[in-house]
Length: 168
Image (cartoon, rainbow, N blue to C red):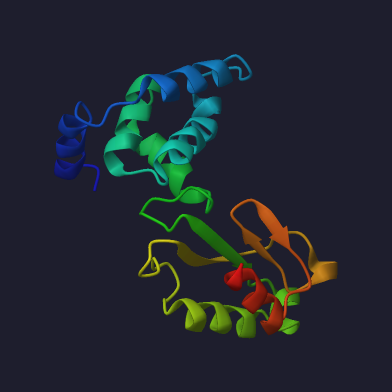
């Protein structure tokens, strides 16, 4: 991607530049880090907060603002699974698929979520509201199975809890 496509994305970045609010928030974060590379994940999270995901063009715009190579920022963006590099629903449900959650039934939770929302993993529901994604570990093994719904951790999930979550 980082050859001809990147050149095209760089040309498009002028049309998808950072907003004043995004620049202001990224600039404020820069004071907390020793260099521009260190603020890269926070900058991506800020763009994602405003736009819902990080497009190629917005990644290039962030790279230009931070004076980093787009490939360097892409490496950061693709390493962290909470940075979305494609559109997602308004509500993102990360179900934990670690060994502990799997033993406790996370596959049933995943199946119930996908069935109720009529989506496959990574897809956006027809109403644009939900995306279901796996997470390697959410750090609550003693309360397995668990899921992170946007930024809220849901513990001790079962199929009834999934119904309650989606019915609210």
